[in-house]
Structure formats: C-alpha cells, structure tokens
Length: 175
Image 1 (cartoon, rainbow, N blue to C red):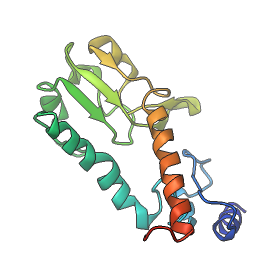
Image 2 (cartoon, rainbow, N blue to C red; image 1 turned 90 degrees about the vertical axis):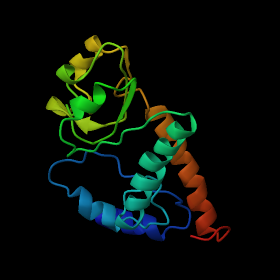
Image 3 (spheres, one colour; image 1 turned 180 degrees about the horizontal axis):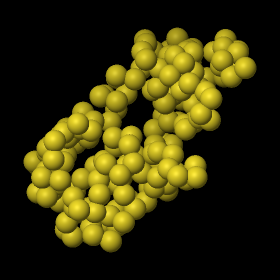
C-alpha cells in the first residue's frame, strides 16, 4: 500500500518532494521503500542514487572542509574506528552522526568537550534518541539536544533540497 502511494506521488506533477520519515514500523522495509522514491523527488537524499552524494557531499566532506577553513585540526572517525575515545580525548568539539545510539558514552568524553549530536534513532519505547548516551551531558561542556538540536537546520536544508527538486523537475537546472 505504501509502495503504491509512493508510485503515485512519483508520477504526480503537483508533488515536488517526498520525504520518508524514519523509523518505520517493524513490518516495513526502509530499504525497499527508499528505493521506490524517485531521485528527482527525494529531498532527504535516501534513495540509493542520492545516498552517496548526500552522506559524503552534504554532511561529512563539507563539514570537514568548513572546519579546516576555520583552521581546525580535524580527525575523522566512523562507526568502526577503533578506540573513538582516544580521538575524543584530544577534541574540543565533536560532531556525531553515526546512526546508532550510545556510540559516544560518558567514559569516552571529558569536561572541556562540546558535542553536537546529529544522530536520530528509535530508542526504547519508541523514544527518539541521538548517537550520544543521555548521561554524557553531565560530563561535557555542552551537548546538543536530541530531538530539538540540529533538526531545525536539517529542516531548512530539506526545504532547500525541495526547491532544487522543483527546479530539476521544471527543467530549470541539470540533474
């Protein structure tokens, strides 16, 4: 039923953007549904054709370059980096967006660290949690809230992507 709805939205010229809100109920396959969304209407960058460009181009790489332009020394870690705590130990600011709860725990941080948690996950009882454990807030200089932190910026970027999708669909820019 949801796949049929997405197919109709893909074909509807009055619909310019589709965003799949995660997490989905357990009986639905996020991967299958993401693949059904037209890349031209995928304003969240979740379709296989858009995912690499969005994750690499819109999140990690621009942030890395922005920090370098501000003369920051940047260490890049990922979900499989051994001993993330070692790298956090030297950091003044940490940006966390792995997509898994409790990637950063209280024993990995220090009181002078500012943490920007851009993760969004479904925790126990369906509660939305970030990638940073809740008790980390007591052990760092500052921690962005989840939900309610970087989400506002994400919403603004989604609307920017919607405007680009409209331009693409109207043939005003190349894909």
